[in-house]
Image 1 (cartoon, one colour):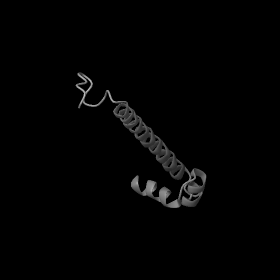
Image 2 (cartoon, rainbow, N blue to C red):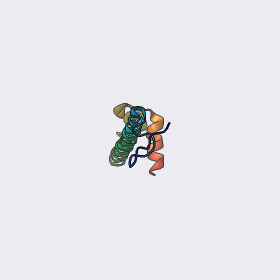
Image 3 (tube, helix red, strand yellow):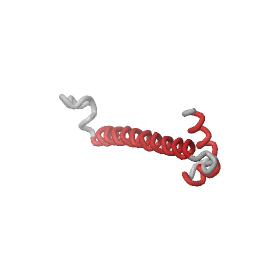
Image 4 (cartoon, helix red, strand yellow):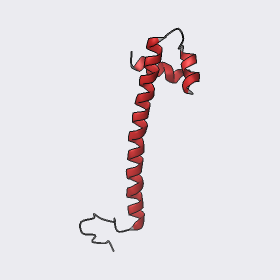
Length: 80
């Protein structure tokens, strides 16, 4: 039988539903933080390449950042 849970919504009084809700909230926060960090990473890659293109080749950038050359190319293409 379902709980009435007035004001809380259906199932929120169940600890499993409450835990799932909390995990959903945490995942959304993690997604937002990851997007922010990717944006900053991309901005820094773009700055380095724009300021010293001879020094910061795709391969050098990839090694410095710790990612693939393909990711560097994607970042630079996407923001060209």
